[in-house]
Length: 250
Ligand SMILES: [Zn+2]
Image 1 (cartoon, rainbow, N blue to C red):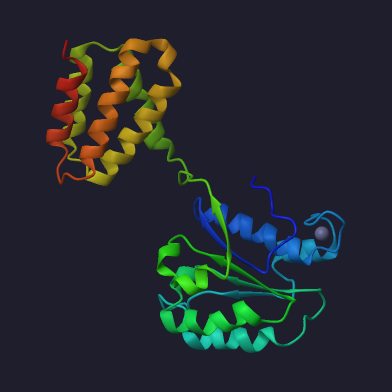
Image 2: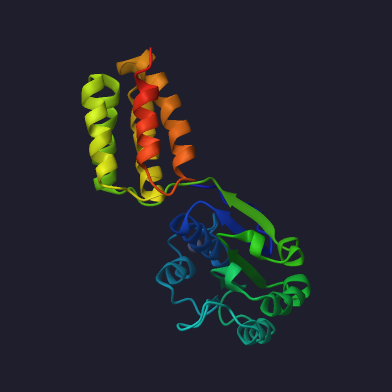
């Protein structure tokens, strides 16, 4: 778990990771702002429990309206007006904007002033997968919290398939491997699906490198090049043929 900054700044831009890890960090930061315990977020005080349950009256979430892609300027104006009303029961008010990169430019401009000179009790948490879509002026008024990259939820079917393929590439005969690659090719996988599979195979092979180090390293190199090419190719045939040839060249 990422350690929380201490003391807390008044505004954070949370990026990186995946949707779940960003949301988790935003929840912990929210509780940390409101916590009444000695080591925020303590997790046990009234404020922490309310924050976790989503019932704290001093937490405000802003997201696109259900039928919209963007966060509109009116929503940020409403947030801004609210920010000048003192907290209901906590010491602070926490404004969560997620996804913050859904704010259109007018909304971002409306946020600037309150980000810069809002009341001291107001805290802002901007959750953005694509921080590049935010104005420089917005980004520069927030402290950046960048999570390390994380794979999205593992797909068990993909992992099982990757494990079987890895086993074959590490220990199978040339014929076995060629056969498996031909079968894969017959499925005509889409470039991104193939890329995900090859990435998973790479993960499996690197975890089992000790099984057959010489071949393992060769497999890894071939897979990496292959995956990088697959991303840019519409069909998988060429890629897989190339992989088979590369793996068993003397
Ligand atoms: Zn607490």
